[in-house]
Length: 398
Image (cartoon, rainbow, N blue to C red; front, side, top):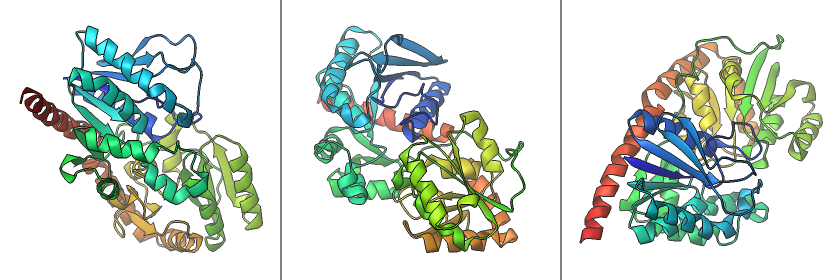
């Protein structure tokens, strides 16, 4: 099949750890590669965000990245991109209208990509699959006045959910949120994200760290919703454990976390490691006795899966996709979000019980390998694309 992936702000060419780079960049990169490995021809469309970008970049066999020339050729916050989505969609439609490559299916990633996809695909009668990666209604619920999303976001997401041919939910919690948003249940398909099982493995050396008792590792962009302050506040309940927080950028949030650590009397046990090169991430996971993933909310969450694939147990908040990937009492422990006491108690219990920790680690590795490979994700989406394209063609012909 010819498959178009639309990812307006999250380019698969951006390395993990860069400013505003997150799970969507990784998802689109790994998914496009896995689809190409199944024999498909994949093009990823993302906005040109700098001068000098080549129009098209070959990312690997069967995958190319197309830089769409809309808006200023400079980096912009994703929340500022909405005014350019009409032009983005019209540019796509014009390209596909005159290009014999026109896709068999269009898969949009994030809500603004969905707007562009529907604009382009409608006149050409192309089927559209949508993955939101995050929902505005959930973000507003947890962030309130701090939510910087355009005010139209939730309304647009409702519109996209009702007009896309199929909507992919990455976890059961997201599927429930989509039905509350008004997306028909028969249009929702549950397809979880995956993890690179060739890179993330227990085989290999850990990162070299000075001996310091037990080690807790937590990974993510330094934004408040990731719950790093809650993790730091939990450390007084976990004596003799050092906490390594990986992610950037090193800005006001990093300074705030240091203040929290000082107030809690654990500054010497908190290590803000900053952005870590992607190649070094498996070694960091291997160095952990336990990996903590304690966000306030999480649409899916790739880092717990990476830790599990490296054979590490996880203490995670019982939110979003973590409810699916982490099996309570089997691969890790689930705790309430924004509850330092519960986080600290779970971490201490696990670090004090070697047998429990080793059992969780073995089960975590098995779960990651059997259920969350990118090949499995690509195969599920391949089947979805084919049935969606077939049903769409029948509807158009009818």
